[in-house]
Amino acid sequence: MSEAAVFSKCAWRLIPFMGLLYVANFLDRVNVGFAALAMNADIGLNAEAYGLGAGMFFIGYFFFEVPSNVAMEKFGARFWIFRIMLSWGVVSMATAFATGPVSFFVLRFLLGACEAGFFPGMILYLTYWFPAATRAQFNALFLSAIVVANIFGAPLSGYVLHAAGGWGIFKNWQWLFLIEGLPSCILAFAALFYLPSKPENAKWLSAEEKRIVTAAVARDDLPHHDLRTGLSDIRVWLLALADFGIIIALYGIGLWLPQIVKSLGFDDLQTGFVVAVPYVATMIAMIAWARISDARGERIRHIVQPALLAAVSLAAAAILGASLWSVLALTLATIGIYAALVVFWTLPQSFLGGTAAAGAIALVNSVANLGGFLGPTIVGYLKAATGTYTAAMGIFAAGLIMTIVVLWTVSRSIPALKPAVMLER
Image (cartoon, rainbow, N blue to C red):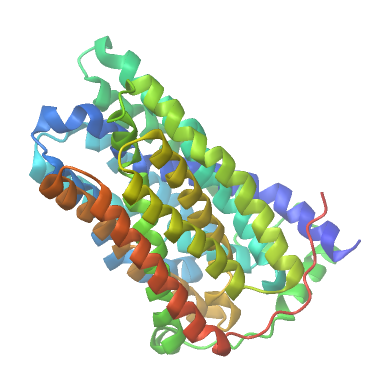
């Protein structure tokens, strides 16, 4: 059996389920953007308080990210993913019972603390199964779950807000948290039984297939250093800064896009479908772009080019103001952000392995995700101060330019790729 066939078998077995977990994960992270359409008035949140609370998630995320990823390396992916999913599902559902700004802030912080380690854990998990030269395409398949969450989650969230107002004792935004948090709790137990911690634990691989996977991953010959080495590598910190510029734009747009669209005159249900449109195009583009990057064996340019597209599009959105043309510009920005992101996540594990890689991936993600705190907070502050989203879009564009500059700076110290093995269709 060829390497490509074995990788395809692993991908079809693992990535759809991992993607399903990430759909639930991302939905619980960003459904607050839709809940805000009704929740803010009910619990007394103004634009600044909502932006601060939405971003508070990433403070909890920051403090617990590295310990969580190191724990996954120690205890195994199967058990640790179960722990993460169950705890975040419970806290996500509990957000339905927020009564004011303080309880909202606390619950968002706890959600981040509980979820910390899931995304970098999944990125680390992929390194157990696929060699470095092929990872962009597998990262893209996994990260397309974010896009699926927005494609289906946005209309679902809009529908719940539209239809659930008269359901029992809860308000529509409370039902939104309760309904969308429950699948995470259920899937936690499914992960406990479905995910093998490493290839050698996979009962659905033959001995020869396990040997092929292990040998292919071992060819990367990455140095397995300790945690301290991974956290002190200057390249890791530079990549964290580069990812920060991507993430501040990603969440700044994602957590406010429903309100931007609704300001154009759409109702809750229509807003859900309009918000889904950019993500349909994004899913196609990011998968195709990742395959091109793998096939050409090149990473930096394949991050810089879509980041530049996103920066230009955000600048255009700032100029165009609240209009359908602005939504089109934000669609192009979304495509660029996600296309850059899927290739970016091939970089941290391209020069470190083992515990050093676990810590480095988590550090990059935790520092970068402070942008998830600053992005919504900046939008909230500037929207309250100016009455528009123009200044915020300009700041996000500047953040992406910073990403481009940092990546060119670090590019000479990133190892060259070996030839890629493309996924069989």
